Image 1: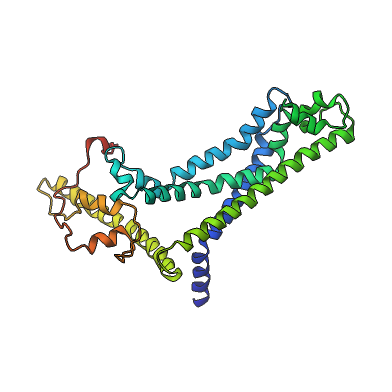
Image 2: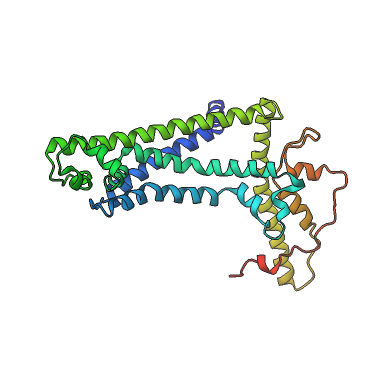
Length: 310
């Protein structure tokens, strides 16, 4: 049992590393699947660039959108801001809002950067895209000291259907692949360096010690975990109470429920302050001396936010 707890604790502590490793494996698998199943370079000077760049940048854009779409912090910050723009910069703290948005955007960039790195290291999409460029500088770079046919046959090189001599065609393909892999490694190195600098800056500017920061993260994880569990329990109780009232054809029993103001306050993103040692907006709300205990008599939603009944 102790061994099981040790293994479980290890995976819990390393879940971020495990998650990124799994994401990297999925990215590699997705790139291989795209390359083998759906990607067919047209080997046409008019279409190569657009086709290759679509496969290179298209999945990266989709991963970026999905990363933003499934980020709870983004929706926590954005929800309701059209009706109340002050929510984006509570207490005039626009710098804190910008920092949160930067953190959200940075997190959403991880998967696209992984895709671009893997795709560039493979070289398939880059070879097709660059071989279709008609820019004189690019063509001169690849066709320097080559036969006159090189300019016309460059777009056919990725498919192996060019009329160039075998050695010349192979040299061009190797040049394209080498450039792609160099760009891939440059992207990896720059991303790692920027990530390191960002982490160093964030920790250097931290208002709490490393151990307290670790505790803060653990607390936030547990709070959200318990919130999910208790919200399901209370939603179940409220649904049972309403259904019981409906089928018994009598007034419902009293059900204490937080008011809308309370929901708004605990939904705000929390920024640590030296003047108050709280670990979340929920803790700050429940420990407030002037807390409003007036319950919502009956939970209601605005007509614009009502859920459709199936």
